[in-house]
Amino acid sequence: MPLIKWDNSFSVNVAEIDGQHQKLVSLINSLDDAMRQGRGKEVLDKTIAELINYAATHFQTEEKYFEQFGYPEKDEHKREHGYFVQKVSAFKKEMDERRLGLTIEVMNFLSHWLTNHIKGTDKKYSQFFNEKGLK
Image 1 (cartoon, rainbow, N blue to C red):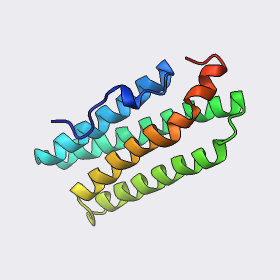
Image 2 (cartoon, helix red, strand yellow):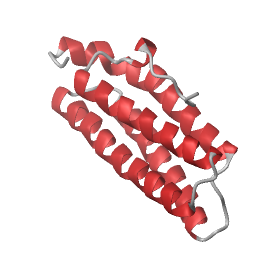
Image 3 (cartoon, helix red, strand yellow):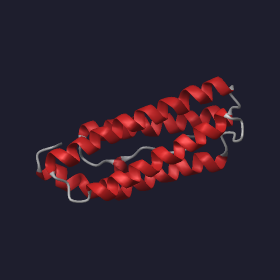
């Protein structure tokens, strides 16, 4: 059973961003599966690196639209993105230094942050972007 099950409650009604969110959910689910199956460190390292890189790409997409359309809550939203990148990068560093394994607590952070971010913070821009013609 996936850690995060995608359903319509995650949709922000912007196809490009929904697709990226689905990819992030898939990466977190893959990371959770690998951890639970005790797969090798190389699988975990590769997947968490992909998650970090893809999250950065996704955040750039959202932030490009914030600038393009003058989204009024962009600064707070960008701070949330920065917090996620900082936190996941710190997890990765500790894993690389063998001070932290991929744990249930790390997976809970990833799943809760992404779920709350999409269903809370990202949903706030849905109507704004739609009204600007972004769908």
